[in-house]
Image (tube, rainbow, N blue to C red; front, side, top):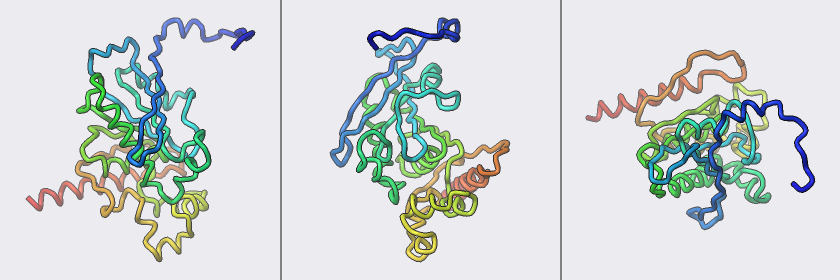
Length: 252
């Protein structure tokens, strides 16, 4: 910015030893013809003649902005520095693209925004420098829910999934959260009783085998200290995955 000056440089000696990857803004068309914005973060010393694994970053919230940010926990540059191309999709529900885009997601948690994720990673998988056989999906909270959901609908796109404090069972979440309005209004757009009467609560919850299926076991839960983040969701995912494998073996 014109006329601006740096006030402090306490981390300058650290940044001198860090090489940052290039960040790039992209727009693609979704399946239903919408403009979808994405941030692509490349590894340091990116070489377009090489092939790189890619990570689809699934944001939590589910509402809120996805843009320039910094955190120890979900740090795009740290992921890219380990040799991954990071694909951060501003899917439906994210802020910054108008009220209609942001408010589309309530009641449609497993709907259009999930397709936005798939459209985003499909677009990047066509690039010659992306190894389409080494794709992963990562995220926390609603991002973790997204990872669970994508694990059941990805049609063999991804090779790995990392879900941090993700919601696997929306009904179980209702019994273990202090945010009752969230499950009642934001997820189902009705009370839990109304949802139970109509079956709405089963439409977009990853545990529902009628909507998603888990072909491989994939749960590792070690320790937890936050009583609001029960480990039951991870255990449920592992049980569902093992059950799916056992059912497949029995069919054979």
